[in-house]
Image (cartoon, rainbow, N blue to C red; front, side, top):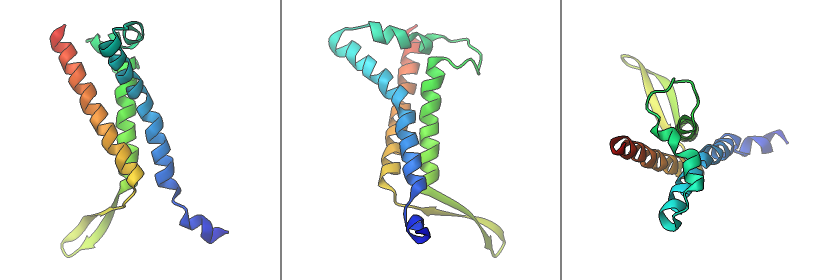
Length: 132
């Protein structure tokens, strides 16, 4: 039983599930933008978008925008940590860092999607900041 548990890769699965969970707020926000653009419905959009337009706010106030961007950053970090493996190696001139890439397709897909969502949200925030 013990050897069977060693063959199951739990860490990539857990980080993949956490990545999906952390991507939900950003996906919901982008869906509300899409509904506003395609159908003109503004009620859901105005519940969440004003937090992106507040310029002076305390760092730890946990506005919706901070929650959305912070969750995306956590999704990227958890999944990149599952993909990359860093080691300290003894080299001829001292310690060196070795990087190993583990091929977990789910974690790679979630990390790429999270980065793309983060780029879109940063662009949206930049456009809104210039607009107002």
